[in-house]
Image 1 (cartoon, rainbow over the protein chains, first blue to last red):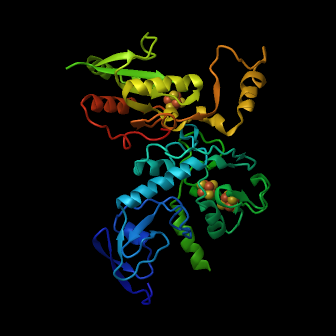
Image 2: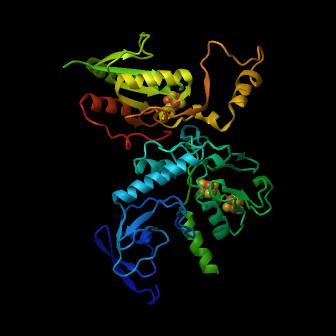
Length: 239
Length: 177
Ligand code: SF4
Ligand code: SF4
Ligand code: SF4
């Protein structure tokens, strides 16, 4: 590592730790086995701080910061698990559940879903907000894959892997706020996409059952994500 | 010690949660010794009684009949447990919520039938436009996720409650599975 990146010392939940100067709080926490939940973050993809699951408290600041995009500094004091954070994380998670139709019992990813896992880990046993029940489409026009917008949590992992790792730029986001949705090419059917190489990376990184392989039964739709860090590193080296 | 008065009720669900309850096998014998089952699809009692200690509610609230039943349950039960995903989230019954009720009727009573294409209006409960999880309608004391919740989890929860403790369920079951 370059000498420019000086080592910083900070505390995470009262524990003193050392870190590379350019590291993020999340990286340091993971190196020291401190659990911070994440949904949009995935090692190997450009972090975007979108889902807000990884918020932490930093002494001296009232704002909760997303730890995946916040760099450490000398003397920083981080709290990852206060009651306030737990409370907000649970609320954010509930909002994610309430915005689409996550019917776990009839989902191809039932049992292999990061959203389901996170709800369990955070002890979120019901949703206090009224469900919105939007009418969402399923696009099954691609030969091998399908997208079920009912189960999308707008983590943009598909967008980021397709542009950053595969280099195809097939996925994008249309609309804003609660009306945002992922689209392929210029909002055409995925099956008509001229850019998609059918590599399947987006399917593998999708945390929920929103992207899935056709012909897989429930619980077969296990995703493989380990390849990502290697692919990203190889790509960086090529550039 | 007097026996705990326990009830179970079945709103808009598939009865799978009640099946899972029966799946406790011989543990049912231990539980049966400690409780009086005062109302349930398992027994033939027509009226929901008063002074119930614990009621397990399977299913979501989909009709006026469900609403009336669940209000009666709340008035007469000390502890109400949302039993399974339909009760906790709306789950499968609530999948109709992203369609207008009209088109649901069309699909169920016209498109999918070969004789007597009519939407019934008499002797059937009035369906609500939206199916709702139980806690949106009444105050719920405990949420037991799962479709259905595993028999082990039901056993654990009931045993804890009968011992006077609050069961910690989130690591014992989850949505869907
Ligand atoms: S299959 Fe590959 S190329 Fe096609 S959209 Fe997914 S990541 Fe992009
Ligand atoms: S389709 Fe999957 S990967 Fe893409 S934004 Fe939605 S949840 Fe994330
Ligand atoms: S939660 Fe599942 S098993 Fe229970 S009533 Fe609903 S659909 Fe049936």
